[in-house]
Amino acid sequence: YSKAMVAGTSQADFSGGSSQEISAVSAEDQTNLQTELKRELIQNTLNNISAKVSSDQIFVTDLAEVDSVSEVYSNKVGDQADSVKLSLKLGTTGIAADKEKLIEYAKSVLNDKTPSGFELNSDQIDFKFKFSVKENGNYVYDVTIGANFLPEIDVSKTIKQIAGRSPKMAENYFNSIPGFGHAEIKLKPNLHGFLGALPRIPKNITLVVSAEQ
Image (cartoon, rainbow, N blue to C red; front, side):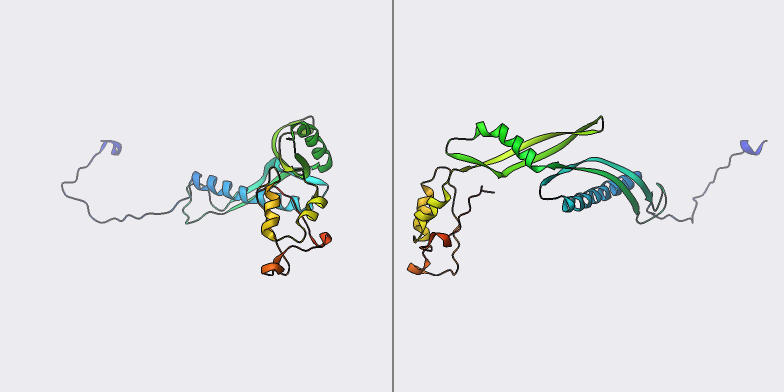
């Protein structure tokens, strides 16, 4: 008979041999590593670019392009290894927009929506950008505009009204202003009793109006 047709049967149990568990690189390991490292590199890129943007610009935090320039894994899928490393290089494109023009446009949209007794300040407008598409060399974004409307306050008049008053009386005055939330009064030095009143000289008082966070 041909050797390929011969079969044998053992009448007794086999013994000996060995078994062991080994760690091997999987496709999921590589994917998870790439996702984590890519997220970290993108955040580093955002921080680095943002630090270089001038004060008259707004950095668009949603990058227009993120491309893998090179990626090299220390092990291939199926290799026996307890860990896997990835060397990843990204190419990114970030955009900075003209701050003044954006705020000017936002005000043109929001001014007629300002409630009576309130005002819209430039420092209370924020933007959220979502990259849409690249067309003819231009990057197109969807932009969401948000704004806080602050109570319309005559700062000089208000300071004169609270000058020399106790913090409690000053807060009561603020409570009469529509849209007021709460006041935080800081005195330097911080004295107690009748000495803890606000300065009697208006120029020694600084009033800052801001939206609640």
